[in-house]
Image 1 (spheres, rainbow, N blue to C red):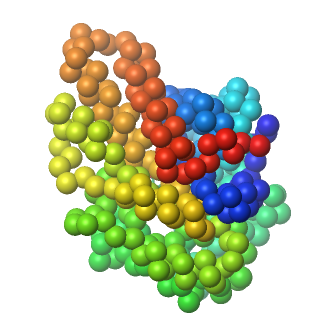
Image 2 (image 1 turned 180 degrees about the vertical axis):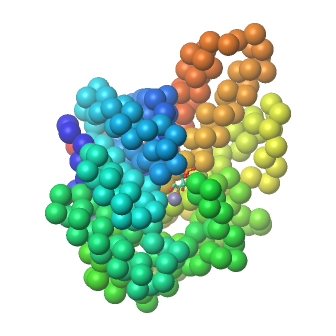
Length: 310
Ligand code: G3H
Ligand code: 13P
Ligand code: ZN
């Protein structure tokens, strides 16, 4: 199956009460680990690439690796730009083979966000590419930008109908209390499900996206800390909250930090146990397997999209 945009995938996810995993990719082992997990569970998958990932790995290298994933897996795969910072980056990704882009105007005023998103939607829809937009602002770290808790803001449900109608976007990322990175909550985790409910009442059938949705699995935080890391206080979104969101209007759940933690934890452990190893295949194959296990776990226990590849 060739690369697909997200339209049908989200329609089925909405109707079926499950969500698609959007996993961040930066190199070959990460792509292979994700595809191993998705293939084992026969799940549709979104491979998402940030501006930082494009800078790190090069657009063409990543596209060729994703082409290999398409060819070898036969699964429905969306290749998506994560947090597109401007029109030019979105255009570049669309021209370069992506099937979906996010334009992140969440830091702009309402009117500026609408104008920028509309411009991307016009370019994208002429080429059958889907567009995710964002309203409200998450806390946490993205690329080199750190958004403090004070500068973050929940999505205002009363804004969403006007935003979606005027921009024509295909899905909407909203802020309900999740944040990027491994330190999401200081005390008890809390998500504003009332905002999600209000938004979905106002936008019936419309796919909602949850960013900052890693659970920061304690097993890997402990592994990192055991082998010299310093991640005390790391905390993610409880899995039962994500399952609830996936059964509601949330059709796309973004996961990056959990992949990073598994990958890095296993490599730290590997070197502690084998200080004489220096062949990258020895530790990267273990990291890749841990990542595949993490993706399977997410698909089955959080997203519910196992067996949904069509
Ligand atoms: O939300 C951001 C993603 O985790 C990607 O992170 O910008 O460091 O590649 P990155
Ligand atoms: P996490 O940091 O919770 O994995 O979120 C990733 C994300 O939202 C990518 O856009
Ligand atoms: Zn994000």
